[in-house]
Length: 370
Ligand SMILES: Cc1ncc(COP(=O)(O)O)c(C=O)c1O
Picture (cartoon, rainbow, N blue to C red):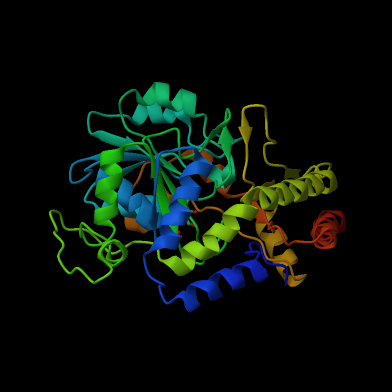
């Protein structure tokens, strides 16, 4: 079976994990700090705080902005449930906006329409790695903070700037199938030093000094710490950070391989009239190519045909406003329409050219045969 997503690991990750296990320090410690320095530098920001998931990163960003009951956060409807769940878990209300048909990113006009006196943040998602037009969004947002959901977008750039570094806080996921895959992991990136200090405490229950610091500074276990604010348990650990450091070194090359695969798909599928290819990169942006989504006629039949032929595909995403857990929501026609035809094709660095050609030929067969 050709999977839709797959992490790509070799001996380097194995050796990195073995080194940590042998070192005897596997929790939050020096490797996490090393990863944070490396990822902050990669994103060109002052601070990175390592966490245990992208969901934890979004939750932390909302907390740092003191978002709570009575507040609204604007979110695109075409995304994973994490962002909306986190907003609700803070007692605030997600306000869903429609998407742009070509980019699948949030529709900037709809954002403008839905800003109210209660809007406390806007949370764009760089869908599939394709950056949101951040200059325009910032102009619309004025002084409303922007939390960038960069879960798909490790390595994406908008007008030369790394995503995550453009809004107030950037949230990354390093989940098992993301471009930088740790198994589980996430991070926030930001330039605000006070918020970064607060996040470092909040991620470990509010405790003001990490165990590693206390062990390291005094060479004996200094037990004293203070807690001014109650936090959560959501920090990264050194095993995941060690995997992340190796993945980070490979990221640009891995994203380049993803880009090559998208070109093979375009060449093989671009002429099929029942299909629409995703937007290509422009001078304005570099995509991480986390997702290669096509818009396909008879999508559900195609999906089953591919599955019967050993090819997994996905649908990213069912629009959030259609889930019953968010209550009755106004219609968002573009997302609802796009949802009926989108299909995510297999894309990961280890996918071979032969496998990509097999996917192409199977899709061609489906449309030729019917
Ligand atoms: C757009 C988006 N945001 C947030 C997340 C949450 O990340 P995690 O699974 O690491 O919690 C995901 C994960 O798939 C995602 O796709």
